Length: 300
Length: 226
Image (cartoon, rainbow over all chains, first blue to last red; front, top):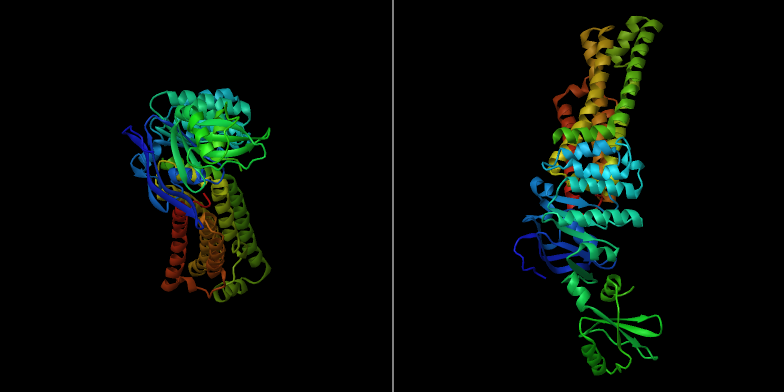
Protein backbone atom coordinates (compact mmCIF):
# COMPACT_ATOMS: atom_id res chain seq x y z
CA UNK A 1 0.00 0.00 0.00
CA UNK A 2 2.95 2.32 -0.27
CA UNK A 3 2.55 5.31 -2.49
CA UNK A 4 5.17 6.12 -5.08
CA UNK A 5 5.03 9.83 -4.18
CA UNK A 6 7.88 10.71 -1.88
CA UNK A 7 6.61 13.46 0.38
CA UNK A 8 4.32 11.69 2.81
CA UNK A 9 2.21 13.63 5.26
CA UNK A 10 1.07 10.44 6.98
CA UNK A 11 3.24 7.35 7.35
CA UNK A 12 1.93 4.29 9.10
CA UNK A 13 4.18 1.27 9.52
CA UNK A 14 3.30 -2.09 11.05
CA UNK A 15 0.44 -0.62 13.03
CA UNK A 16 -1.15 -3.07 15.42
CA UNK A 17 -4.00 -2.48 17.81
CA UNK A 18 -6.49 -4.70 19.59
CA UNK A 19 -9.22 -4.42 22.19
CA UNK A 20 -9.65 -7.24 24.70
CA UNK A 21 -7.83 -9.68 22.44
CA UNK A 22 -9.85 -8.72 19.32
CA UNK A 23 -7.43 -7.61 16.64
CA UNK A 24 -8.47 -4.37 15.02
CA UNK A 25 -5.34 -3.62 13.03
CA UNK A 26 -2.56 -6.06 12.33
CA UNK A 27 0.56 -4.80 10.59
CA UNK A 28 -1.15 -1.94 8.78
CA UNK A 29 1.10 0.05 6.43
CA UNK A 30 -0.24 3.21 4.85
CA UNK A 31 1.23 6.33 3.31
CA UNK A 32 -0.68 9.45 2.44
CA UNK A 33 1.24 11.75 0.14
CA UNK A 34 0.95 15.53 0.21
CA UNK A 35 -2.02 16.73 -1.81
CA UNK A 36 -3.92 13.47 -1.71
CA UNK A 37 -7.49 13.09 -0.54
CA UNK A 38 -7.88 9.64 0.96
CA UNK A 39 -11.19 8.17 2.06
CA UNK A 40 -11.23 5.51 4.75
CA UNK A 41 -14.12 3.11 4.25
CA UNK A 42 -15.30 0.08 6.13
CA UNK A 43 -18.26 -1.31 7.96
CA UNK A 44 -18.93 -0.44 11.57
CA UNK A 45 -16.48 -2.14 13.91
CA UNK A 46 -13.62 -2.71 11.49
CA UNK A 47 -11.40 -0.08 13.06
CA UNK A 48 -12.06 3.19 11.26
CA UNK A 49 -12.52 5.12 14.48
CA UNK A 50 -9.51 3.39 16.03
CA UNK A 51 -7.32 4.40 13.10
CA UNK A 52 -8.68 7.95 13.13
CA UNK A 53 -8.11 8.17 16.90
CA UNK A 54 -4.53 6.99 16.45
CA UNK A 55 -3.98 9.49 13.64
CA UNK A 56 -5.49 12.28 15.68
CA UNK A 57 -3.19 11.39 18.54
CA UNK A 58 -5.85 10.35 21.02
CA UNK A 59 -4.86 6.70 21.12
CA UNK A 60 -1.43 5.18 21.22
CA UNK A 61 -1.05 2.10 18.99
CA UNK A 62 -0.10 -1.16 20.68
CA UNK A 63 2.75 -1.58 18.19
CA UNK A 64 4.10 -0.01 15.04
CA UNK A 65 4.38 3.66 14.23
CA UNK A 66 2.04 6.35 13.02
CA UNK A 67 3.80 9.51 11.88
CA UNK A 68 2.15 12.78 10.94
CA UNK A 69 4.55 15.30 9.41
CA UNK A 70 7.31 12.96 10.56
CA UNK A 71 6.29 13.09 14.24
CA UNK A 72 4.54 10.38 16.27
CA UNK A 73 0.84 11.18 16.07
CA UNK A 74 0.32 10.73 19.83
CA UNK A 75 3.04 13.24 20.62
CA UNK A 76 2.82 15.99 18.02
CA UNK A 77 4.68 19.21 18.65
CA UNK A 78 2.60 22.41 18.82
CA UNK A 79 3.97 23.37 15.40
CA UNK A 80 2.85 20.09 13.82
CA UNK A 81 -0.56 20.42 15.51
CA UNK A 82 -0.95 23.88 14.02
CA UNK A 83 -0.69 22.30 10.55
CA UNK A 84 -3.42 19.73 11.22
CA UNK A 85 -7.12 20.51 11.19
CA UNK A 86 -9.26 17.94 12.98
CA UNK A 87 -12.97 17.53 12.58
CA UNK A 88 -14.37 15.36 15.31
CA UNK A 89 -17.38 13.11 15.01
CA UNK A 90 -20.45 15.10 16.00
CA UNK A 91 -18.82 18.41 14.95
CA UNK A 92 -17.43 19.05 18.39
CA UNK A 93 -16.89 22.68 19.31
CA UNK A 94 -16.60 24.76 22.47
CA UNK A 95 -20.35 25.10 22.76
CA UNK A 96 -20.15 27.55 25.67
CA UNK A 97 -18.73 30.14 23.27
CA UNK A 98 -20.52 32.40 20.83
CA UNK A 99 -19.62 32.66 17.14
CA UNK A 100 -17.53 35.78 17.76
CA UNK A 101 -15.85 34.34 20.82
CA UNK A 102 -14.83 31.09 19.15
CA UNK A 103 -13.28 32.92 16.22
CA UNK A 104 -11.44 35.28 18.55
CA UNK A 105 -10.18 32.31 20.55
CA UNK A 106 -8.90 30.18 17.66
CA UNK A 107 -7.39 33.12 15.77
CA UNK A 108 -4.80 33.50 18.56
CA UNK A 109 -3.35 30.05 17.91
CA UNK A 110 -2.81 30.06 14.15
CA UNK A 111 -0.29 32.35 12.53
CA UNK A 112 -1.94 32.04 9.12
CA UNK A 113 -5.49 32.56 10.39
CA UNK A 114 -7.72 33.58 7.50
CA UNK A 115 -10.77 35.42 8.89
CA UNK A 116 -12.38 35.72 5.46
CA UNK A 117 -12.90 31.99 5.24
CA UNK A 118 -14.68 31.95 8.59
CA UNK A 119 -16.78 35.01 7.86
CA UNK A 120 -17.81 33.69 4.47
CA UNK A 121 -19.44 30.67 6.07
CA UNK A 122 -20.87 32.71 8.93
CA UNK A 123 -22.55 35.10 6.50
CA UNK A 124 -24.18 32.09 4.89
CA UNK A 125 -25.19 30.87 8.33
CA UNK A 126 -27.06 34.11 8.92
CA UNK A 127 -26.77 34.07 12.71
CA UNK A 128 -25.57 37.01 14.80
CA UNK A 129 -22.07 36.87 16.23
CA UNK A 130 -23.40 36.67 19.77
CA UNK A 131 -25.30 33.46 19.01
CA UNK A 132 -24.09 30.73 21.34
CA UNK A 133 -22.94 27.49 19.73
CA UNK A 134 -24.82 25.30 22.19
CA UNK A 135 -28.05 26.77 20.87
CA UNK A 136 -27.32 25.76 17.27
CA UNK A 137 -28.55 22.76 15.32
CA UNK A 138 -26.02 20.13 14.30
CA UNK A 139 -25.98 21.52 10.76
CA UNK A 140 -25.37 25.08 11.93
CA UNK A 141 -22.61 23.89 14.24
CA UNK A 142 -21.01 21.96 11.37
CA UNK A 143 -20.80 25.22 9.45
CA UNK A 144 -19.04 26.96 12.34
CA UNK A 145 -16.61 24.06 12.71
CA UNK A 146 -15.92 24.02 8.97
CA UNK A 147 -15.27 27.77 9.05
CA UNK A 148 -12.82 27.35 11.91
CA UNK A 149 -11.04 24.50 10.14
CA UNK A 150 -10.70 26.41 6.88
CA UNK A 151 -9.57 29.61 8.58
CA UNK A 152 -6.70 27.69 10.15
CA UNK A 153 -5.40 27.02 6.61
CA UNK A 154 -4.21 23.57 7.61
CA UNK A 155 -1.90 21.46 5.48
CA UNK A 156 -3.63 18.28 6.63
CA UNK A 157 -7.31 17.80 7.37
CA UNK A 158 -8.53 14.72 9.22
CA UNK A 159 -12.30 14.48 9.13
CA UNK A 160 -14.09 11.88 11.20
CA UNK A 161 -17.54 11.14 9.80
CA UNK A 162 -18.35 14.73 8.86
CA UNK A 163 -21.77 13.71 7.51
CA UNK A 164 -23.10 12.39 10.81
CA UNK A 165 -26.16 14.33 11.90
CA UNK A 166 -26.30 16.52 8.81
CA UNK A 167 -29.36 16.75 6.59
CA UNK A 168 -28.91 16.60 2.82
CA UNK A 169 -28.62 20.38 2.43
CA UNK A 170 -25.97 20.90 5.09
CA UNK A 171 -24.09 17.83 3.90
CA UNK A 172 -24.04 19.16 0.35
CA UNK A 173 -22.86 22.56 1.55
CA UNK A 174 -20.15 20.90 3.60
CA UNK A 175 -18.95 18.75 0.70
CA UNK A 176 -19.05 21.66 -1.77
CA UNK A 177 -16.88 23.82 0.44
CA UNK A 178 -14.59 20.95 1.25
CA UNK A 179 -14.17 20.04 -2.42
CA UNK A 180 -13.23 23.64 -3.28
CA UNK A 181 -10.92 23.90 -0.30
CA UNK A 182 -9.02 20.71 -1.12
CA UNK A 183 -8.53 21.83 -4.73
CA UNK A 184 -6.70 24.95 -3.54
CA UNK A 185 -3.02 24.37 -2.95
CA UNK A 186 -1.70 20.97 -2.03
CA UNK A 187 -3.84 20.13 0.90
CA UNK A 188 -3.96 16.62 2.21
CA UNK A 189 -7.21 15.18 3.50
CA UNK A 190 -7.90 11.94 5.33
CA UNK A 191 -11.59 11.37 5.89
CA UNK A 192 -14.24 8.86 6.84
CA UNK A 193 -17.91 9.04 6.05
CA UNK A 194 -20.90 6.77 5.98
CA UNK A 195 -22.10 8.59 2.87
CA UNK A 196 -20.18 6.70 0.23
CA UNK A 197 -21.33 8.81 -2.71
CA UNK A 198 -19.48 11.85 -1.28
CA UNK A 199 -16.23 10.00 -1.81
CA UNK A 200 -16.73 10.25 -5.56
CA UNK A 201 -16.57 14.03 -5.29
CA UNK A 202 -13.78 14.20 -2.76
CA UNK A 203 -11.41 11.24 -2.70
CA UNK A 204 -8.46 10.39 -4.91
CA UNK A 205 -7.79 7.11 -3.14
CA UNK A 206 -9.74 4.75 -0.94
CA UNK A 207 -8.53 2.67 1.96
CA UNK A 208 -10.94 -0.22 2.38
CA UNK A 209 -10.92 -1.87 5.78
CA UNK A 210 -12.36 -5.29 6.48
CA UNK A 211 -12.88 -7.22 9.69
CA UNK A 212 -9.68 -8.65 11.10
CA UNK A 213 -7.50 -5.75 10.14
CA UNK A 214 -7.27 -6.35 6.39
CA UNK A 215 -6.75 -3.07 4.55
CA UNK A 216 -6.53 -2.39 0.83
CA UNK A 217 -5.51 0.88 -0.78
CA UNK A 218 -6.88 1.68 -4.22
CA UNK A 219 -7.31 4.69 -6.42
CA UNK A 220 -10.98 5.64 -6.59
CA UNK A 221 -10.98 5.42 -10.39
CA UNK A 222 -9.18 2.09 -10.29
CA UNK A 223 -11.71 0.71 -7.80
CA UNK A 224 -14.65 1.89 -9.91
CA UNK A 225 -13.07 0.47 -13.04
CA UNK A 226 -11.79 -2.84 -11.76
CA UNK A 227 -14.25 -3.94 -9.10
CA UNK A 228 -17.24 -5.54 -10.74
CA UNK A 229 -20.53 -7.17 -9.93
CA UNK A 230 -21.98 -10.15 -11.76
CA UNK A 231 -25.44 -11.57 -11.39
CA UNK A 232 -25.93 -15.35 -11.32
CA UNK A 233 -29.35 -17.08 -11.06
CA UNK A 234 -29.71 -19.06 -7.81
CA UNK A 235 -31.75 -21.95 -9.27
CA UNK A 236 -31.94 -23.48 -5.80
CA UNK A 237 -28.18 -23.86 -5.56
CA UNK A 238 -25.87 -23.12 -2.68
CA UNK A 239 -23.99 -19.84 -2.98
CA UNK A 240 -20.53 -20.10 -4.61
CA UNK A 241 -17.75 -19.79 -2.11
CA UNK A 242 -15.70 -16.58 -2.04
CA UNK A 243 -11.97 -16.88 -2.53
CA UNK A 244 -9.42 -16.54 -5.25
CA UNK A 245 -10.93 -14.70 -8.20
CA UNK A 246 -14.26 -14.28 -6.40
CA UNK A 247 -13.99 -11.56 -3.77
CA UNK A 248 -17.46 -11.83 -2.27
CA UNK A 249 -20.84 -13.41 -2.94
CA UNK A 250 -24.16 -12.07 -1.69
CA UNK A 251 -27.67 -13.43 -2.09
CA UNK A 252 -29.69 -10.67 -3.75
CA UNK A 253 -33.35 -9.92 -4.39
CA UNK A 254 -34.79 -11.65 -7.48
CA UNK A 255 -33.52 -15.15 -6.63
CA UNK A 256 -29.97 -14.48 -7.74
CA UNK A 257 -26.46 -14.22 -6.42
CA UNK A 258 -24.33 -11.13 -6.75
CA UNK A 259 -20.72 -12.09 -7.35
CA UNK A 260 -18.09 -9.42 -6.75
CA UNK A 261 -14.66 -9.65 -8.28
CA UNK A 262 -11.73 -7.62 -9.54
CA UNK A 263 -11.59 -9.89 -12.59
CA UNK A 264 -13.43 -9.86 -15.91
CA UNK A 265 -16.46 -11.99 -16.72
CA UNK A 266 -14.49 -14.76 -18.43
CA UNK A 267 -12.19 -15.24 -15.41
CA UNK A 268 -15.14 -15.30 -13.03
CA UNK A 269 -17.00 -17.83 -15.21
CA UNK A 270 -13.87 -19.94 -15.32
CA UNK A 271 -13.52 -19.80 -11.56
CA UNK A 272 -17.17 -20.75 -11.02
CA UNK A 273 -16.86 -23.69 -13.37
CA UNK A 274 -13.70 -24.84 -11.64
CA UNK A 275 -15.60 -24.82 -8.36
CA UNK A 276 -18.47 -26.87 -9.76
CA UNK A 277 -20.96 -24.06 -10.36
CA UNK A 278 -22.42 -23.58 -13.78
CA UNK A 279 -21.76 -20.03 -14.95
CA UNK A 280 -24.88 -20.10 -17.14
CA UNK A 281 -26.76 -16.80 -16.81
CA UNK A 282 -23.73 -14.94 -15.42
CA UNK A 283 -23.96 -11.32 -16.49
CA UNK A 284 -22.37 -8.03 -15.39
CA UNK A 285 -24.43 -5.61 -13.30
CA UNK A 286 -23.97 -1.84 -13.10
CA UNK A 287 -22.88 -0.57 -9.69
CA UNK A 288 -22.83 2.70 -7.82
CA UNK A 289 -19.85 3.35 -5.56
CA UNK A 290 -22.03 2.43 -2.59
CA UNK A 291 -22.94 -0.89 -4.27
CA UNK A 292 -19.25 -1.52 -4.86
CA UNK A 293 -18.40 -0.66 -1.25
CA UNK A 294 -21.06 -3.01 0.11
CA UNK A 295 -19.97 -5.67 -2.35
CA UNK A 296 -16.37 -5.28 -1.24
CA UNK A 297 -16.95 -5.21 2.50
CA UNK A 298 -19.97 -7.55 2.52
CA UNK A 299 -23.43 -7.06 3.98
CA UNK A 300 -24.10 -7.72 7.63
CA UNK B 1 -1.86 32.02 23.38
CA UNK B 2 -1.72 31.97 27.18
CA UNK B 3 -4.12 34.87 27.34
CA UNK B 4 -6.51 33.02 25.03
CA UNK B 5 -6.32 29.89 27.17
CA UNK B 6 -7.05 31.86 30.35
CA UNK B 7 -9.89 33.66 28.57
CA UNK B 8 -11.47 30.35 27.53
CA UNK B 9 -11.35 29.15 31.13
CA UNK B 10 -12.80 32.42 32.34
CA UNK B 11 -15.72 32.19 29.90
CA UNK B 12 -16.70 28.89 31.46
CA UNK B 13 -16.50 29.90 35.10
CA UNK B 14 -17.45 33.56 35.15
CA UNK B 15 -21.11 33.02 36.06
CA UNK B 16 -20.36 30.49 38.77
CA UNK B 17 -17.56 32.70 40.05
CA UNK B 18 -19.92 35.68 40.20
CA UNK B 19 -22.43 33.58 42.16
CA UNK B 20 -19.69 32.39 44.52
CA UNK B 21 -18.44 35.94 44.99
CA UNK B 22 -21.95 37.00 46.03
CA UNK B 23 -22.16 33.99 48.39
CA UNK B 24 -18.80 34.86 49.98
CA UNK B 25 -19.83 38.50 50.26
CA UNK B 26 -23.02 37.42 52.03
CA UNK B 27 -21.12 35.03 54.28
CA UNK B 28 -18.60 37.77 55.13
CA UNK B 29 -21.42 40.14 56.01
CA UNK B 30 -23.00 37.41 58.12
CA UNK B 31 -19.71 36.93 59.99
CA UNK B 32 -19.43 40.66 60.71
CA UNK B 33 -23.01 40.84 61.94
CA UNK B 34 -22.58 37.67 64.02
CA UNK B 35 -19.50 39.10 65.76
CA UNK B 36 -21.27 42.38 66.50
CA UNK B 37 -24.26 40.42 67.80
CA UNK B 38 -21.98 38.35 70.04
CA UNK B 39 -20.53 41.46 71.63
CA UNK B 40 -23.98 43.00 71.94
CA UNK B 41 -25.49 39.88 73.48
CA UNK B 42 -23.00 38.91 76.18
CA UNK B 43 -20.27 40.55 78.18
CA UNK B 44 -17.13 41.23 76.00
CA UNK B 45 -14.97 39.24 78.42
CA UNK B 46 -17.07 36.18 77.68
CA UNK B 47 -16.62 36.67 73.92
CA UNK B 48 -12.88 37.12 74.40
CA UNK B 49 -12.73 33.97 76.50
CA UNK B 50 -14.60 31.95 73.86
CA UNK B 51 -12.38 33.30 71.11
CA UNK B 52 -9.01 33.11 72.88
CA UNK B 53 -9.38 29.95 74.98
CA UNK B 54 -12.09 27.88 73.32
CA UNK B 55 -11.22 28.94 69.77
CA UNK B 56 -14.85 29.79 68.90
CA UNK B 57 -15.45 32.02 65.91
CA UNK B 58 -18.29 34.08 64.52
CA UNK B 59 -17.65 32.88 60.99
CA UNK B 60 -18.58 29.21 61.14
CA UNK B 61 -20.67 29.91 58.03
CA UNK B 62 -17.34 29.96 56.14
CA UNK B 63 -16.45 26.39 57.08
CA UNK B 64 -18.39 24.76 54.24
CA UNK B 65 -18.55 27.51 51.66
CA UNK B 66 -14.97 27.12 50.29
CA UNK B 67 -15.12 23.39 49.57
CA UNK B 68 -18.61 23.65 48.10
CA UNK B 69 -17.37 26.53 45.95
CA UNK B 70 -14.32 24.56 44.87
CA UNK B 71 -16.54 21.72 43.70
CA UNK B 72 -18.87 24.10 41.86
CA UNK B 73 -15.99 25.90 40.18
CA UNK B 74 -14.33 22.65 39.05
CA UNK B 75 -17.58 21.34 37.61
CA UNK B 76 -18.34 24.60 35.81
CA UNK B 77 -14.83 24.72 34.39
CA UNK B 78 -14.15 21.14 33.41
CA UNK B 79 -17.51 19.53 32.65
CA UNK B 80 -17.94 21.50 29.39
CA UNK B 81 -14.71 19.92 28.16
CA UNK B 82 -14.78 16.45 29.68
CA UNK B 83 -18.29 15.56 28.47
CA UNK B 84 -18.78 14.40 24.91
CA UNK B 85 -15.04 14.05 24.14
CA UNK B 86 -14.60 17.84 24.01
CA UNK B 87 -11.26 17.63 25.77
CA UNK B 88 -9.92 16.66 22.35
CA UNK B 89 -10.46 20.21 21.21
CA UNK B 90 -8.09 21.52 23.84
CA UNK B 91 -5.59 18.69 23.40
CA UNK B 92 -5.31 19.51 19.71
CA UNK B 93 -4.65 23.21 20.21
CA UNK B 94 -1.10 24.05 19.11
CA UNK B 95 0.17 24.22 22.67
CA UNK B 96 1.48 21.45 24.90
CA UNK B 97 -0.98 19.56 27.05
CA UNK B 98 0.96 20.66 30.13
CA UNK B 99 0.57 24.31 29.25
CA UNK B 100 -3.14 24.03 28.47
CA UNK B 101 -3.83 22.15 31.70
CA UNK B 102 -1.65 24.48 33.75
CA UNK B 103 -3.68 27.44 32.53
CA UNK B 104 -6.92 25.67 33.42
CA UNK B 105 -5.73 24.70 36.90
CA UNK B 106 -4.05 28.07 37.39
CA UNK B 107 -7.24 29.97 36.75
CA UNK B 108 -9.36 27.68 38.90
CA UNK B 109 -6.91 27.71 41.79
CA UNK B 110 -6.41 31.44 41.39
CA UNK B 111 -10.13 32.18 41.63
CA UNK B 112 -10.57 29.80 44.57
CA UNK B 113 -7.64 31.47 46.31
CA UNK B 114 -9.08 34.91 45.52
CA UNK B 115 -12.30 34.02 47.30
CA UNK B 116 -10.23 32.65 50.17
CA UNK B 117 -8.26 35.88 50.39
CA UNK B 118 -11.49 37.84 50.48
CA UNK B 119 -12.75 35.66 53.36
CA UNK B 120 -9.43 36.03 55.16
CA UNK B 121 -9.51 39.80 54.72
CA UNK B 122 -13.04 40.08 56.08
CA UNK B 123 -12.30 37.81 59.04
CA UNK B 124 -9.01 39.49 59.91
CA UNK B 125 -10.27 43.06 59.63
CA UNK B 126 -13.46 42.19 61.49
CA UNK B 127 -11.54 40.39 64.23
CA UNK B 128 -8.99 43.20 64.56
CA UNK B 129 -11.81 45.66 65.19
CA UNK B 130 -12.77 43.74 68.33
CA UNK B 131 -9.77 41.64 69.39
CA UNK B 132 -6.05 42.15 69.82
CA UNK B 133 -3.71 41.06 67.03
CA UNK B 134 -2.96 37.68 68.64
CA UNK B 135 -6.60 36.62 68.71
CA UNK B 136 -7.26 38.05 65.24
CA UNK B 137 -4.30 36.02 63.94
CA UNK B 138 -5.58 32.90 65.68
CA UNK B 139 -8.99 33.42 64.07
CA UNK B 140 -7.28 33.70 60.70
CA UNK B 141 -5.41 30.47 61.42
CA UNK B 142 -8.77 28.77 61.99
CA UNK B 143 -10.02 29.97 58.63
CA UNK B 144 -6.99 28.97 56.53
CA UNK B 145 -7.53 25.15 56.65
CA UNK B 146 -11.14 25.68 55.57
CA UNK B 147 -9.92 27.67 52.60
CA UNK B 148 -7.37 24.92 51.92
CA UNK B 149 -10.32 22.50 51.85
CA UNK B 150 -11.67 24.66 49.01
CA UNK B 151 -8.45 24.21 47.05
CA UNK B 152 -8.47 20.47 47.81
CA UNK B 153 -12.10 20.15 46.69
CA UNK B 154 -11.34 22.05 43.49
CA UNK B 155 -8.30 19.92 42.70
CA UNK B 156 -10.01 16.67 43.73
CA UNK B 157 -13.06 17.36 41.55
CA UNK B 158 -10.70 18.23 38.69
CA UNK B 159 -8.89 14.90 39.14
CA UNK B 160 -12.20 13.02 39.11
CA UNK B 161 -13.42 14.78 35.98
CA UNK B 162 -10.21 14.11 34.05
CA UNK B 163 -9.81 10.51 35.24
CA UNK B 164 -10.55 8.11 32.34
CA UNK B 165 -11.66 5.02 34.31
CA UNK B 166 -14.72 4.56 36.50
CA UNK B 167 -12.73 2.71 39.14
CA UNK B 168 -10.19 5.51 39.20
CA UNK B 169 -12.94 8.06 39.68
CA UNK B 170 -14.29 6.17 42.70
CA UNK B 171 -10.81 6.05 44.22
CA UNK B 172 -10.27 9.73 43.58
CA UNK B 173 -13.65 10.56 45.09
CA UNK B 174 -12.56 8.86 48.30
CA UNK B 175 -9.16 10.56 48.19
CA UNK B 176 -10.80 13.94 47.65
CA UNK B 177 -13.26 13.39 50.49
CA UNK B 178 -10.44 12.41 52.83
CA UNK B 179 -8.26 15.31 51.74
CA UNK B 180 -11.07 17.80 52.35
CA UNK B 181 -11.87 16.13 55.68
CA UNK B 182 -8.27 16.57 56.84
CA UNK B 183 -8.73 20.32 56.53
CA UNK B 184 -12.26 20.43 57.93
CA UNK B 185 -12.03 18.31 61.07
CA UNK B 186 -11.88 20.51 64.19
CA UNK B 187 -8.28 21.10 65.22
CA UNK B 188 -6.81 22.57 68.36
CA UNK B 189 -6.18 26.33 68.07
CA UNK B 190 -2.83 26.85 66.37
CA UNK B 191 -2.51 23.22 65.28
CA UNK B 192 -2.16 24.17 61.62
CA UNK B 193 0.66 26.54 62.47
CA UNK B 194 2.95 23.58 63.17
CA UNK B 195 5.52 23.08 60.34
CA UNK B 196 4.54 19.42 60.02
CA UNK B 197 0.89 20.31 59.52
CA UNK B 198 1.79 22.94 56.95
CA UNK B 199 3.95 20.39 55.12
CA UNK B 200 1.08 17.88 55.19
CA UNK B 201 -1.28 20.47 53.73
CA UNK B 202 1.18 21.41 51.02
CA UNK B 203 1.81 17.75 50.22
CA UNK B 204 -1.90 16.97 49.87
CA UNK B 205 -2.51 19.92 47.58
CA UNK B 206 0.61 19.27 45.49
CA UNK B 207 -0.32 15.60 45.02
CA UNK B 208 -3.84 16.53 43.94
CA UNK B 209 -2.43 19.10 41.51
CA UNK B 210 -0.27 16.49 39.76
CA UNK B 211 -3.00 13.88 39.24
CA UNK B 212 -4.93 15.69 36.44
CA UNK B 213 -1.79 15.80 34.29
CA UNK B 214 -1.30 12.06 34.74
CA UNK B 215 -4.98 11.38 34.09
CA UNK B 216 -4.94 13.25 30.78
CA UNK B 217 -1.71 11.51 29.76
CA UNK B 218 -3.33 8.15 30.42
CA UNK B 219 -6.32 9.18 28.33
CA UNK B 220 -4.00 9.55 25.35
CA UNK B 221 -2.94 5.93 25.78
CA UNK B 222 -6.42 4.53 26.17
CA UNK B 223 -8.52 6.88 24.06
CA UNK B 224 -11.08 7.07 26.86
CA UNK B 225 -12.96 10.08 28.18
CA UNK B 226 -11.64 12.60 25.66
